[in-house]
Amino acid sequence: MNISFLFGTETGNAEMLADDLNMAFEEQHDTRVANLQDTTVQDLQTADLNIIVCSSYGDGDLPGSAQAFASVLQKERPDLSGVRFAMFGLGDMEYASTFGHGSMKLATLLVECGAQSIGARVVHDASNDEMVEDMAIPWAENVVGSL
Amino acid sequence: MTTNRSTAKIAIVGAGPSGCFTAQALLKLDPNLELDIIDAQPTPFGLVRYGVAADHQGTKAVARQFSRIFTRQNAHFFGNVQIGTQVSVEDVLQSYDAVVLAAGLSEDRNLGIPGDDCPGIIGSRALTRSLYEHPNAAELPELGSHPVIIGMGNVAVDILRLLSKTPDELHGSDLGQGPTDWLASQEFEQITMLGRSSVASARFSSVMIKELSNLSAIDVRTHYLNNAKDGTAQDRFDAIAHLEAETAGGVPVELRFESRPTAITETAQGLTLEIDTPDGPQSLLASSIITAIGFTSDGRLNREALLSEANDKASPQDRLYTIGWFRDGPVGAIAQCRGEAQILAKRILAELKPDAVRKGSALLVDLPDVIDFKHWEAIDALEVSRAPDNRCRQKLSNMADLLRPTTS
Image 1 (cartoon, each protein chain N blue to C red):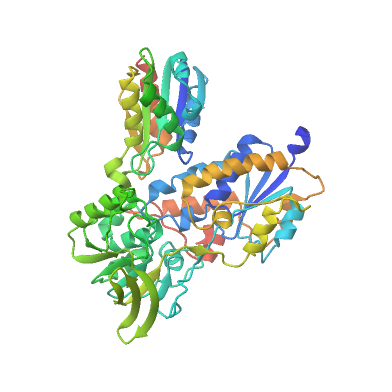
Image 2 (image 1 turned 90 degrees about the horizontal axis):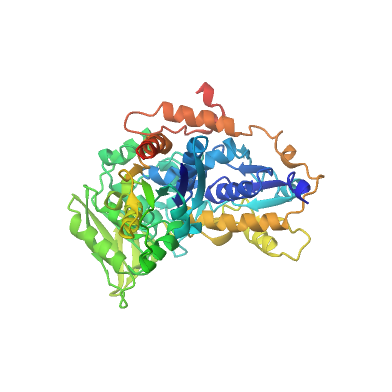
């Protein structure tokens, strides 16, 4: 399967996880890793599956490297029918009222443009003990296995 | 050029966020660099360990990325090495092809008003060093029944939040036993936080204010909460108004905007703080005063001279760089360090002229009690393993234990 691991990051934690996911899948699949700020609508369409890791920043906002990508979706409303994605959020329950809002906003935009969300969006809590890759890799295996 | 560059030696002074992000970016661009990160402390990650609040573990998660600089990108850690006193910057420059000063700003800035040296005035850095069990920390201070925090930035809010938390609200943090007992023993009748800023110009972020709304022990009220006329700070104004409405605990917390401290005097009852307000001068009684108005250099490095040397790109000594708070002053959070570091890394690699004569880490290896990354990993594992159930870590707090963690 052709899988793109895309990340929207502010401090680099989402990039690190995207790298880890890529390492876990690169032997079995045709994979790539890219920053959302370098990702176009065409890029989304060429992958069989886009696995997106997206944090939240500030007051439940999109992280810096996802903002330009999101504003293209917002303004141009490209037709993303046929695009499949799965969203993994990074959040922090110390800020409970906006927990995971960055990934939620991005997933909503993608769906509004016609993309198909595979599986449920999950959000890792950075204030929790569990290692993020221990949660994300089994989640991604489930997503890939469901196709 | 490419073959030369692969042997280039770079030293970064300071293993905090700016130093680590710079190392990460450099090694991503050129994985073959010989990169050494030097820190005055025996532990890496700077403010991630000793500045980010004990109850903000999510923010500290960035340390996992920084660890990989040493475990996967092959940077070397030289902890417990004081550049500026133990080893001069000139010696580091002679031993490395490029030197990045990312030493941060580790001392409290003074108020600069009459009486700012009275006993009972505590800098936020001194206080947080004690709270977060820095090996060079002083004993935790007496705050009395009515401490006043001066400052309107996120550091001031961190201190207000920690002083306001109940023991239950500290679950999952890495606040140590001593500081935990100290906090639990406080009997505050009131806490005041004040600053000259209006709500529009105050430096705190609204998300930090929203976080206070969940606290059970405090009851926030405000003075001079005047909204900006152009509405630019509506989210901050709303966050404060929400905080005032939501909190209903037993300890009054007064937030005083537009209140500029002008003088402090010692009295029999404690300290008297004179402030200038929109209603004219007022006096407040304080049992202690905590200043959180920014940071300054500890003087170990001659910051002004080094900044001008680093900026003087016409000089032959074209290999000195600065970044982070050391370069820009004490403004900006961890995320900003990353972008700045990526810009600086590109510039360094473009200007790098390796010279095989420079000896690199041979300068450092024979110093006494140099801490390497394996040593830090042993400290880290020990601290995590001995944490009680309601804590994620129990720090080693004294220098002897940090230098010899296995024997503690």
